[in-house]
Amino acid sequence: MKQLEVQIMGQSYLLGCPEGGEQRLLEAVEKVDTAMCRIRDAGKVKARDRIAVLAALNIAFDSSGKPAQPPLQAASFANGDSTATSMRNLADDVKLAQLLVRLDQALGDDGRLI
Image (cartoon, rainbow, N blue to C red):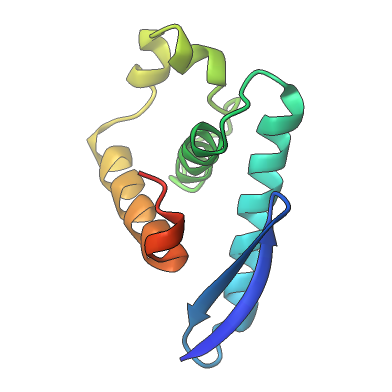
């Protein structure tokens, strides 16, 4: 297994990836970094863990193959808005859980999100 050092939202992470998977990992890192920086720069959320969870939700929602819709917003979750929850169905929840497990595995014990 190969290890790559990457930066996500200004913080360095040493991630393992299978041989030949470097490009896919770098593309995933870029997607996560972009999503997290966009949420941070919006200024509504400051905590890194909340930013990471919202970015993961947005990425999972975007990759679910549904017609384009606006990304989930931090305010929706902070205010308990049920419309954000109703946008996801059971299949999306499963995909999200799988994505969070993969993120936790990639980050290792030092960078656990949840």
